[in-house]
Image (cartoon, rainbow, N blue to C red):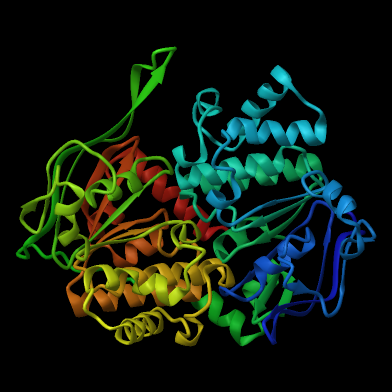
Length: 536
């Protein structure tokens, strides 16, 4: 690392104007970033981490302004550049990976087209040269069979694969500064380790600086040189990673480092009735080629899965990104087509039409992986949370629905007074809590939780795990818990199922599986997770 700072943020503030009031999101922060250095910004959801990163590229909405400070990149104040000048910096000198890839990728263009566009605009690459570079980038970030994936659209990729495409886009032009806003949130532990290794290798080769925004302290240990801890818009502590982790000074930093979900998994319920079961369940997508779109093969997203989940239990489903975890959850809820019997509360539901399924919907809920994509941007939070009540309890008054929505938001740790705001006014972690509230307000009996804690910082993660555990005890809830975070799975799951390429590799009681995994793949998965956790 050279001694001269590549990026300098000095006495910097960000405020948002809303109607007649102003909210200070970032309050007079200062730090710098040298060439080849990695600075991590950590803190709770809503602390101002992402706003800081977006400010560097001037990507905040028009309601934002800067009461104080400078953002100097190579000596130039980015806040004073013209629109044309800042466009030349974006994507070329400074690039950014956003927290929610589904909303960052264009849904009507293939991933190949989107990366080629970046290469054309900034490097003048076209034709076979551009295609070859795209395949290289997709290979580097761990996309399997990249030649086949060039024609895929974002919705045809898993959450983790979409995030890898975003990283490929950001690295395409070999930038001087790489801003990563939760870049490994959607990734399983094995790919997470690969991506962190890749970023370190590229950083060494290119001399690239990284501003790494994350809530995962294990990643901070692994990748960062220095760390800034943020709370309520302020940097409360900063310094070398080893020093901060070894001897934190601020009470908030101490609480953050001490946060860990309590290991109290739901006990197995061998005598409880089976909540949901399936036998040899399959979800195959045809691969069609040629003029007449002839089926030449299948993508076997879920390939012969058999499971039984009893009332009050939690089945943890783990595996690599693209292994079929989310597809399995959607199939069990009859949100996508599948082959094989599905029995819910003793009643076969496979093959039921939309109207016949509606009575079951109140008891079957889901919390999606991408809260921004699953929350309507045109609805207020109270309308989003109470929407299910309007459908399933039409006789309930508007006032009562609003009260139920407020109570649900309070249950997940959000101020009920914020319920008249809209999703874009909340951080990623806060949006995830809104998604949990929307599912729980109907008091369901079976909930699919698709990475519900992936966007949350350690403190809030522990709170949400405790919340889910308490709700389960009070209401005898049954969970299908999909996650790549084995620490959270260990805290909640009574049984664990390991998936790879659509198939079950191994399953059994959580305590037994974590102590003595039998398959090589499960051992590799656990080893990757524990190597991240123990990295110093």
